[in-house]
Length: 358
View (cartoon, rainbow, N blue to C red):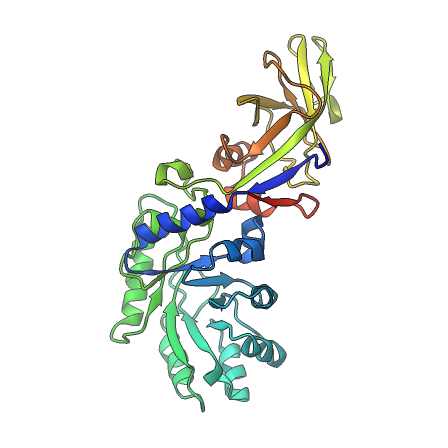
């Protein structure tokens, strides 16, 4: 029990999920999204495990530079681009692709004359209203980029789907129509679909797909789990029982006495709390997997510990493993109890939780 809590990272599952995604993507190439520390799975280790992905996408310059420092030679795309001359120089040094979504980024290229060193992805805002050029502004942006003193090495187009996880697809269809209209006649490669778009079959003709959550074995849809799509969980967050307490009927457990035992109960105290990424919003009844059985959370999540009712589950003692999510307990199910989404749980695993490749 040298490590009370750890996140076991199944690299075989990661590679399996990449193959499932490739099969769904058809002729489209895969951009593996590894931003935010690969959704909590370890930026460098995850990328090294799937080096044969067509490309990688990160949000920040520092993430891209870390991949290069680790020896990743595949295409790396900065989804937020760069905003200063020094950032531009660093991105050029490491041969990173830039997403251009703002006129100030075009001005930066105009002032430095450095576009020839980059592959550029122009982002069109088709309805997310976050990053990108509105369709009415896109032609002018494209013209400015094409008039740069030194033309970019490559030029591609992208957009981002705001509601691909909604089954009716009405918003997605409207976005795809706007994107198709903006791209008409340009004959440039495109990237449109995220995990949800890929799994629901949106825009099958996209040249590049950008899976994130699906790559790590979780579903973006509220009414399904990754297993429904043949995906496997990559992270299993497992902790250990610190002690087991006998609680009499009517006794209360934890801060604020938030749970009162309705009967005599055995309560296991587990080394996991919001200091580890187990959200305080976890509702009473949130399942924890112990001895292959679901034990309900009782009382409030504290910084370092949670309590679960293990009455009727035999063989539980100090050191017994307890799975918070992962193998045998889908993170999607746990997220629903926490009132959040799988993305947030995976990304919230704290730095004090070691990642153990398997």
